[in-house]
Amino acid sequence: MSISTLSNVFANTLITTVSRVPLPTMWTAGSIQQRTLIMGAALAVLSNVLFGVLYAYSSFLAPLSGTQVFIWRMLAMWAALVGYLLISGRLGGHIHKLKALTGAKQWAWLLLPTPIFLSQFWLFMWAPVNGQGVQTAMGYFLFPLMMVVFGCVLFGEKLSRLQWLAVGFAALGVGSEIVRTHSVSWATIWVCGTYPIYYILRRWQGIGAVTGLLVDLTIFAPFALAYLCLFAPSSVALVSGSGFFILMLAGLGVLSVLAMRTNVDASQLLPVNVYGMMSYLEPALLFILAITVLGNPFESAMIYSYGLIWLGIVCLLLHGIRQLRGTKNETLGTKAAA
Image 1: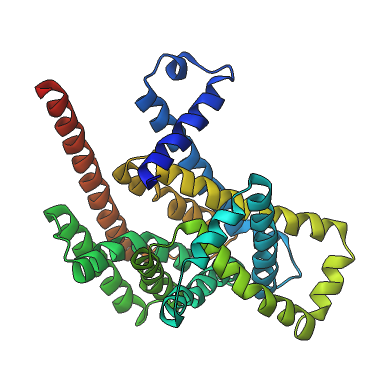
Image 2: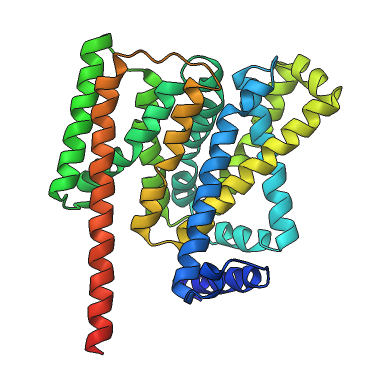
């Protein structure tokens, strides 16, 4: 069964289930395509909100450090993910995919992106409580722009005028920040510079998001346990002796898996352009949370450099809207010709 067929089966099953619940007329009177779009948009919003909650989560787990929260999160995610796959009966399918890999070269390519993934998750939990929340959020704003550049360089994708304009605004924004501070935050560079590499490597390998996540977490679990036992035994004593911390860490794992799961589901239900545009909601939420809830510093002088980057994002959004309209008109033209 092809991936597109599986996506259609998933969409029809999910929509049928939701249709049994009393819902507004906008849902019940809409076509299957409209329902799919509404469901995908709802899942995308939920996913981004959950990632925003996770961004501020570490601030509620003091006195655990950002690194300790990261370690516990990885273990909680592994337990929640394996439990979910066991209950849903999908664990065997992911193991079968991994067994299909043959030779040391394929396994080496599979494991190569794991350090990038782990470093990104560590930064996600460490930055908000260490004054780097705004800079990390800006890295996530730059991430789609860097994906455009990587696609142009590595895959020979041609950029539209709006995409070139977006890259130009982003370059000016980063240049303005360098002039202002004589440097750019390492957190910003790490997010936008290495995260695209992770996704590109997974794309080349043909490894699904959930399978890749299972591999990354399983590899790291023994190291996480060793770290807690050897370097942070006090955190083990704190967590094991507190029902509050046990519940909070369990919630951290469940929310993490739910955020990833809803994100993957949204990507299957929504057109690529719509999914890409909605992904900008996450860095916007991270940015707002970093300034308000977490109290990370934001200087008024940042508005110039960050404003240029946001202009670049607006250009990408306009490009996505134009592509979406073009696809819609092409579909309508095909139906009319038929």
